[in-house]
Image (cartoon, rainbow, N blue to C red; front, side, top):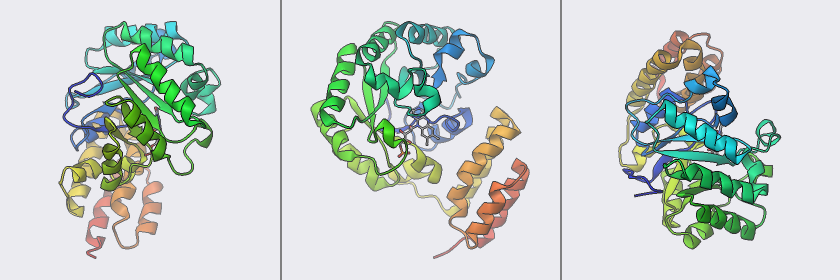
Length: 312
Ligand SMILES: Cc1cc2nc3c(=O)[nH]c(=O)nc-3n(C[C@H](O)[C@H](O)[C@H](O)COP(=O)(O)O)c2cc1C
């Protein structure tokens, strides 16, 4: 049991807006992730019956545990959003609350990491969502000051949060600089079984290190885009370059089926580098991949790269 859920293991796919769409989550769920996260979903959009927002609630039958990550600036709104989710789908294992996003278009309205400055409101959100019956996972960033970080986690735990994932960068750092592991280690020691880790998870060693601190879960984000097979490697499955290529081509067809050509092309471009960096002339191939106009063109570039794979 982790964070109120029965999970196969501690490795999770982190929420990533524009990335953790249905096809990407399905890929990771079948390649080593014990749990996936939707992109952050606007409670205002859910309450307003916005069709695009509703589309983000689709779940694949191949996903076992999925968290629907919500964002909003008010406790009543987040609870109404949660109610809409429960009315529309029985597939979610837990609610996630985004208290981490530092981007101005989210914080300007008092959502995302702006909630770190409103601890009482943050706690009311957790309490309200808990009342709907699913576990609640909260994602935060570290504060400048360790005491404040620990106090905020404690408050969320007291409000009933089942998991608090800490991204070891402050909101002001956005995605720059090195994530602070020390505060995550301290929080994991202080709150056993509660704390998840996020930030600079790029290698098997990074996963091991976070788990050695006692973190309940480790979240893969940009490291998963750079190496979509990292979780499998952690489990001891090492795929050849040819296999990786085949898996990626399968992913691109599935993404097209689930989200249409345009969306599939955008996603495939994000993941193409993971295969192309291992071939001779990778810089030029990557340039071609980034300017491809269709998934077919990009698949042809990827297939063409298979004869160029480095054997060294
Ligand atoms: C493109 C992108 C989109 C993201 N969207 C979200 C989001 O919707 N919700 C959230 O809680 N975190 C989001 N994050 C933050 C990640 O979940 C993660 O905490 C962060 O990238 C740190 O991990 P990393 O250094 O291993 O990438 C996003 C990150 C990226 C790169």
